[in-house]
Image (cartoon, rainbow, N blue to C red; front, side, top):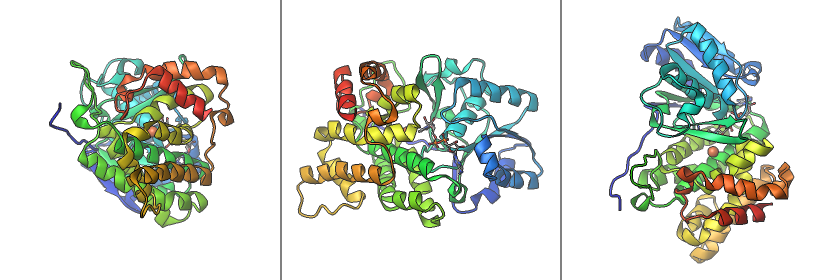
Length: 401
Ligand SMILES: NC(=O)c1ccc[n+]([C@@H]2O[C@H](COP(=O)([O-])OP(=O)(O)OC[C@H]3O[C@@H](n4cnc5c(N)ncnc54)[C@H](O)[C@@H]3O)[C@@H](O)[C@H]2O)c1
Ligand SMILES: [Fe+2]
């Protein structure tokens, strides 16, 4: 039994409307003179890149942008970013975008500081030391990558998404400006928002850190559930219950954008210390094969995995129902816990996430191979409150089909 736990974050979190105006000072304080902004063509088109470059130029920094980012980035994108970085020779990187670009920046900062290819660092705790200073500026409210220890890339050869996990991947600064999410289209808002809900729910219902089943000799940035993780997850769930529908319905609803931006960062703090579990393990093969977005795959799978985990976490699910705004007065814990699954189901429908795997192009004969691939991702499966076999995973996929 373990008696200690830890909490890691980005070194600094700067949060709030128009925080972006402080980017130049922040980069200067990190000692940067030449910064490479890692982003994509959509954010360039939406003029978000411009808003990030301006304060950097005002602080007399030399700036270049890599605009070759892509959703669910491939290892090739990281190599292209690295090639540009090698000729520009930055002393700091800025990850600007959703999780995809922030993760690309994390991987590029790693490759600029340590010998190896993207594959060298796949897995838990494989980065040998600090990476190039990195500032992450999220433009979606979802992944929490701005504070997290993870970078997720697509291994196109093996058709699966792979994770790189290391506390060295946590950015020096997370600059979270909700105004940068206003141009996020409704689908991206919905998908990334339900990803944040998945992070918070998987952390809040994870196995307790005291009994986290880490085999001797193995290291992991995940450690199971603990009180600071709970605190962040609870607040995130409440904010998402209050604001996700509103943010999807009206992207210019600034209170909703701000609430979701905070929720995503809090959920990132929760899951990046506690862990994510079966939803994410199943999404990696599903997303790698059918190319749905990470959030869409997670949101689709979430209620089915909640149903599987419910027997192990009745009280926590009852609390989730209350946090999501359900009236559970007079209900037993069991009934309130059922309510949590229904609330997530309704939220999923309201924001347009598909209900079944067949709706996103999954074929029945893919279910068994998906379960087998997911069962190999022990670093996250061990976070689940119930032990899972390959048949359990197959069973969940069948109910979701
Ligand atoms: N590192 C982590 O801790 C972590 C956690 C969860 C998920 N992820 C990964 O993050 C990725 C998903 O990230 P995401 O959900 O943030 O979406 P994303 O980064 O893939 O972005 C989706 C699309 O929305 C566009 N977009 C983003 N912000 C916009 C804005 N403000 N205005 C207009 N367009 C905008 C992007 O250009 C892109 O085309 C996946 O690869 C997933 O595996 C990482
Ligand atoms: Fe996620």
